[in-house]
Length: 190
Image (cartoon, rainbow, N blue to C red; front, side):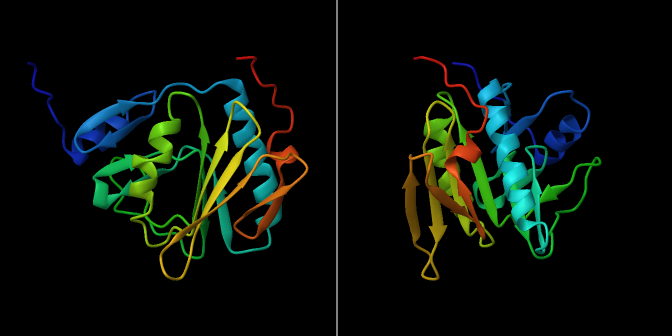
């Protein structure tokens, strides 16, 4: 049996600042991020455009997957596909030139076959520990399906699921047509 060598957050951030690829930090282990399929990237792009236009006059920012988010209670650092921050941006102490976001308002993950279980379970459990997070949205990249979890004042998470491309899903203050989320996306035949 081989022991797994764990590294410190400091070593992770130092490594992350010089490597040409992104990795996540999971309690001392480095998890390399795989490249995404074209459909995944098209969905992310569509979301950023639609949400960005909707929120342009509000005190919110829409960021792509290059912002690192700290999940302190789970000892993780992750790169969500799309992050919305409303109000003041709170960043952790900058180390090695890397900004680490502490207060996302909305996180959107685009699902793939290899990440769906993790995004729906462990990652969601960790995201819920962020008191700033008000909504978690999961967008399927293999078919038209969007699941939106919204935090209630009593700290429950209500699910709204939509799979009709002519319907809208509310993301933050934006009602977005599913057909706009999936614009120019071609699904692979399974």
